[in-house]
Length: 161
Ligand SMILES: [Zn+2]
Image 1: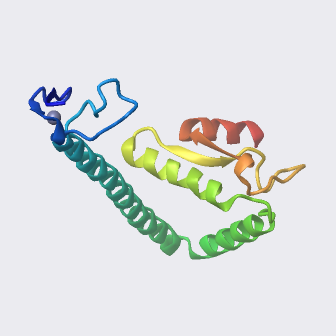
Image 2: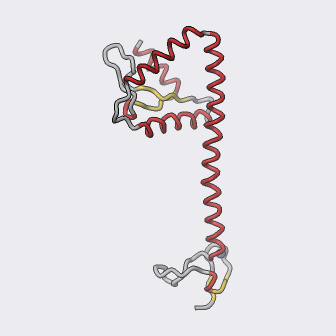
Image 3: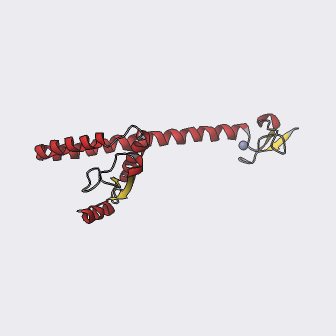
């Protein structure tokens, strides 16, 4: 073998610039080593960028909701602590051992990501069967959670109340 053309950059290079690959008809990779290296770097950069972006919106959103929640708590201290304790207690009682906590937190991550991207079209994580229902109470488990548009969620609550 002597010179080969790279299917990516189009340059003709010596075959030593291509990785040997038996299952390719010509016996070498179609993209030259240089192109493959660049593609690998770009791939890593992209996935790192995704991780960083994910962290960024998480932090930003956490701060924003914290500030908003604190403002409301300051104005409604009694309501806030009673609501919080009731909600946490209900949620704790409603998490069975078999709940998939990873999947549950993924739902909340999706919600935060969505709301960061489309603040005009907010979504909620909703309990399909409410934790405190009139006749039955739902569990805080992944298959009792759904992501709903905020507007649909309000419609649902109006229907049940
Ligand atoms: Zn190339």
